[in-house]
Image 1 (cartoon, rainbow, N blue to C red):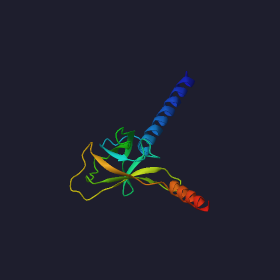
Image 2: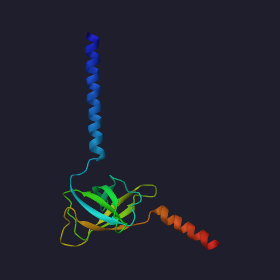
Image 3: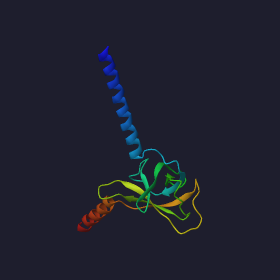
Image 4: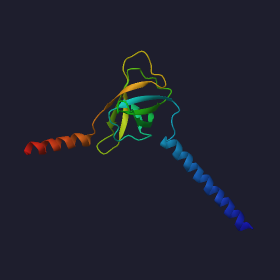
Length: 149
């Protein structure tokens, strides 16, 4: 009887600790949407973006990519961005897809403009695609090999 009680208490402690780890990882990884407002941005390409990709202003995370789809009329990629409610962006904000580093992934960088009117949920902003470092190096190498021929 004493052995079963010890095993039950030990099992409860293990479950409690596992629950604590799950809560810790859930809060530190920021995988939950911020619950802010959603805006869209249209891009010619969305290479390297996934749902959950960070959205930053001046290097500070202000949201994340929710999803993206192809616009059948313009053949551009429409990206839905979840922006923190505390961040108010001007209507002339521009979105860029940029590299996080030489070997890093990509993220969306927002460049706020100077308009006095602020974006509202559902508004669309202009998006610009910046080629990745790999693309630039590839074009340079390909250009050099074509000149030799």
